[in-house]
Length: 122
Image 1 (tube, rainbow, N blue to C red):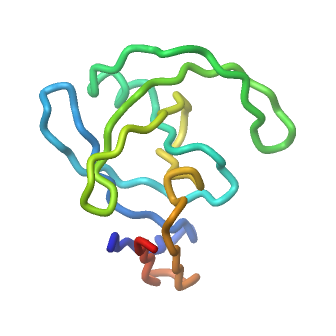
Image 2 (image 1 turned 135 degrees about the horizontal axis):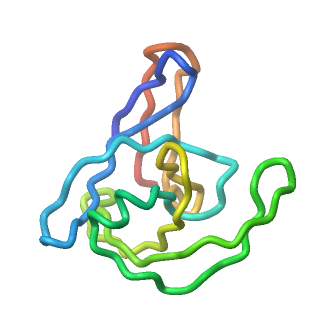
Protein backbone atom coordinates (compact mmCIF):
# COMPACT_ATOMS: atom_id res chain seq x y z
CA UNK A 1 0.00 0.00 0.00
CA UNK A 2 1.22 3.49 -0.87
CA UNK A 3 0.13 6.29 1.47
CA UNK A 4 0.05 10.00 0.78
CA UNK A 5 -1.97 13.08 1.61
CA UNK A 6 -3.97 15.93 0.12
CA UNK A 7 -2.11 19.23 0.42
CA UNK A 8 -3.47 22.74 1.06
CA UNK A 9 -3.86 23.24 -2.73
CA UNK A 10 -6.17 20.20 -2.94
CA UNK A 11 -3.57 18.05 -4.71
CA UNK A 12 -3.37 14.36 -3.83
CA UNK A 13 0.27 13.30 -3.67
CA UNK A 14 2.22 10.19 -2.72
CA UNK A 15 5.90 9.28 -2.38
CA UNK A 16 7.32 7.29 -5.30
CA UNK A 17 10.60 5.37 -5.15
CA UNK A 18 12.53 6.09 -8.37
CA UNK A 19 15.75 4.34 -9.39
CA UNK A 20 18.58 6.79 -10.06
CA UNK A 21 21.60 6.23 -12.31
CA UNK A 22 23.68 5.12 -9.31
CA UNK A 23 21.29 2.17 -8.84
CA UNK A 24 19.91 3.59 -5.60
CA UNK A 25 16.26 4.40 -5.06
CA UNK A 26 15.22 7.88 -3.97
CA UNK A 27 11.78 8.99 -2.85
CA UNK A 28 10.08 11.73 -4.84
CA UNK A 29 6.69 13.26 -4.08
CA UNK A 30 4.36 12.99 -7.10
CA UNK A 31 0.85 14.36 -7.69
CA UNK A 32 -1.83 11.84 -8.64
CA UNK A 33 -3.43 12.97 -11.92
CA UNK A 34 -6.35 10.82 -13.11
CA UNK A 35 -6.60 12.98 -16.25
CA UNK A 36 -3.10 11.90 -17.33
CA UNK A 37 -3.14 8.61 -19.22
CA UNK A 38 0.61 7.88 -19.04
CA UNK A 39 2.85 6.52 -16.28
CA UNK A 40 4.80 9.50 -14.96
CA UNK A 41 5.98 13.01 -15.86
CA UNK A 42 9.19 14.53 -14.53
CA UNK A 43 10.86 17.86 -15.13
CA UNK A 44 14.20 17.99 -16.98
CA UNK A 45 16.37 18.50 -13.87
CA UNK A 46 15.18 15.24 -12.29
CA UNK A 47 15.55 13.38 -15.60
CA UNK A 48 19.15 14.63 -15.73
CA UNK A 49 19.78 13.44 -12.15
CA UNK A 50 18.36 10.03 -13.07
CA UNK A 51 20.84 9.83 -15.95
CA UNK A 52 18.16 8.82 -18.45
CA UNK A 53 18.60 9.06 -22.21
CA UNK A 54 15.74 10.04 -24.51
CA UNK A 55 13.89 7.14 -26.15
CA UNK A 56 11.87 9.13 -28.66
CA UNK A 57 9.66 12.16 -29.03
CA UNK A 58 5.93 11.83 -28.62
CA UNK A 59 3.09 14.13 -29.67
CA UNK A 60 0.76 14.58 -26.67
CA UNK A 61 -2.48 16.40 -25.96
CA UNK A 62 -2.45 18.66 -22.90
CA UNK A 63 -5.25 20.34 -20.99
CA UNK A 64 -7.07 22.95 -23.05
CA UNK A 65 -6.56 20.96 -26.28
CA UNK A 66 -2.93 22.07 -26.53
CA UNK A 67 -0.64 19.75 -28.48
CA UNK A 68 3.03 19.44 -27.70
CA UNK A 69 5.96 17.23 -28.60
CA UNK A 70 7.82 15.86 -25.55
CA UNK A 71 10.79 13.59 -24.99
CA UNK A 72 10.13 10.19 -23.46
CA UNK A 73 12.45 8.11 -21.29
CA UNK A 74 12.49 4.63 -19.82
CA UNK A 75 12.87 4.53 -16.05
CA UNK A 76 12.30 2.23 -13.10
CA UNK A 77 10.20 2.64 -9.98
CA UNK A 78 9.24 0.46 -7.04
CA UNK A 79 5.53 -0.14 -7.40
CA UNK A 80 3.66 -2.31 -4.91
CA UNK A 81 7.01 -3.73 -3.80
CA UNK A 82 8.12 -4.73 -7.31
CA UNK A 83 10.55 -3.16 -9.74
CA UNK A 84 8.58 -1.78 -12.67
CA UNK A 85 9.94 -0.30 -15.91
CA UNK A 86 7.85 2.64 -17.08
CA UNK A 87 7.76 5.41 -19.68
CA UNK A 88 8.55 8.86 -18.31
CA UNK A 89 7.47 12.01 -20.15
CA UNK A 90 9.47 15.21 -19.80
CA UNK A 91 7.25 18.05 -18.61
CA UNK A 92 7.47 21.20 -16.54
CA UNK A 93 5.56 21.52 -13.30
CA UNK A 94 5.00 19.05 -10.50
CA UNK A 95 5.81 15.40 -11.24
CA UNK A 96 2.57 13.62 -12.18
CA UNK A 97 1.59 9.99 -11.60
CA UNK A 98 -0.91 8.89 -14.24
CA UNK A 99 -3.52 6.24 -14.88
CA UNK A 100 -1.19 3.81 -16.68
CA UNK A 101 0.90 3.41 -13.51
CA UNK A 102 -2.29 3.21 -11.42
CA UNK A 103 -3.63 0.37 -13.58
CA UNK A 104 -4.39 -2.66 -11.37
CA UNK A 105 -4.66 -0.49 -8.28
CA UNK A 106 -7.40 1.01 -6.17
CA UNK A 107 -7.06 4.73 -5.50
CA UNK A 108 -8.80 6.24 -2.47
CA UNK A 109 -8.67 9.97 -1.78
CA UNK A 110 -10.17 11.79 1.18
CA UNK A 111 -10.79 15.03 -0.71
CA UNK A 112 -9.96 17.57 2.00
CA UNK A 113 -6.80 19.28 3.19
CA UNK A 114 -4.74 16.69 5.08
CA UNK A 115 -6.95 13.86 3.78
CA UNK A 116 -5.43 10.43 3.19
CA UNK A 117 -4.44 9.17 -0.24
CA UNK A 118 -4.18 5.37 -0.51
CA UNK A 119 -3.09 3.29 -3.48
CA UNK A 120 -3.67 -0.43 -3.01
CA UNK A 121 -2.81 -3.26 -5.37
CA UNK A 122 -5.86 -5.13 -6.67
